[in-house]
Image 1 (cartoon, rainbow, N blue to C red):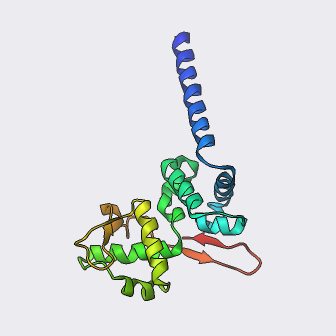
Image 2 (spheres, rainbow, N blue to C red):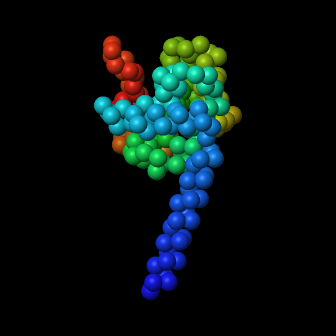
Image 3 (cartoon, one colour):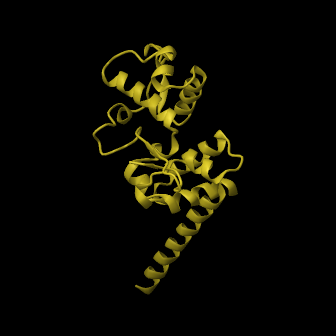
Length: 190
């Protein structure tokens, strides 16, 4: 019996060491700083702050690659915080613009309409066509949309059925409310 307990304990300790080593090696120091900020911020005052806003608040020279690395890490490690498990990794990984683009594509697919064109998306989202193109590239890289020549418009469809029917599923996947109260730090909330 004692041997079995010691073997189980050793297995658990080894597993925890592997998880800790994986975590420590997956993010750069500046990416880890953003993650630490998010974990400390999430859940306070209903905060579901996104990676992009955390990078803005912390300042520094962050890149799209940093945001992608953090989003990918959060997707693979939902145990980091209950906010991720409740609201989904997409909620904190995507920018407000990317969420709006995804909502338009999702709505079109759900309603069995062609995907909107670049000329339709830009004014609807209130950004430049270049920002739409960049947003589409990020959504594709995160695996949220995929190219589909039959989709019409910008030529993308949602990559998974859950992205088509995300509304009403207790998820805020492509929703956001960015709050900026004078004298208080900005935050994303639900």
